[in-house]
Image 1 (tube, rainbow, N blue to C red):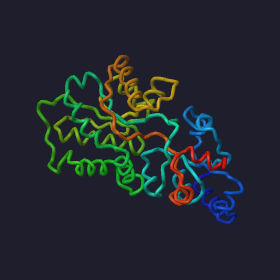
Image 2 (image 1 turned 90 degrees about the vertical axis):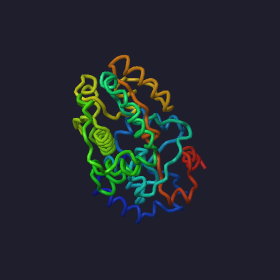
Image 3 (image 1 turned 30 degrees about the vertical axis):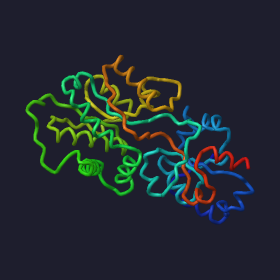
Length: 313
């Protein structure tokens, strides 16, 4: 198992070019597929060991790279396939091809707004307002939104404002506070790119609708933000169904069906913490296996099982 930082990846690319390990001849002789992955995925329950058992083939050549570099590794020829997030903007940057999870291994990770029951009872219109937003966030939309930040260099707050304008959910008129909405709504988020953008989408959308919004965007990751919501320190933030199921509930079964996963977390959060899961977005930000456009065109890989067939052929 190899571990590559950014500097080491440059050296590795040079060695691949010199040795010709990416050529058809070598690939035919060795029948290996180099997998680029962050170390975490090789160890988790929904990661490499169970993936290989589920699909019935192994990656014997692993390139363990810094988090987020698997896209670059595949896009620049350092690896044949990589593992990453479905809505990552660098998939679009490097024109990578996502392979179909045709044996349904990867868990459901649809983002959805979580809101405290008390604040939802105060402002029941929140459900419809957030549904307007979540319904627009399909896989393509969320991927391109992430690309604006992680690839094009926009600030999450600016990308969020522009997206809301493009979707017709807000206008350029300076928002004014509704006198009937005096009780503040505290909006939180996690700290990674997509979570920050979702947090700002929520903040600006509610401000335009006249809410008194308190900004806690970027509060912290799951271990911080979940108890903050349960204790009433924040009122609303976006969580992923799979994260709620496995990391918060401690559910030990991988659930791949988005609706089933949503139903499980919705019932548990409401019953145990008076927290409501609003409608989830169509985008499923689960793990995905991807390859380069060049290898896709060369080998015709569309599904993950075809990688196994390639190795066995």
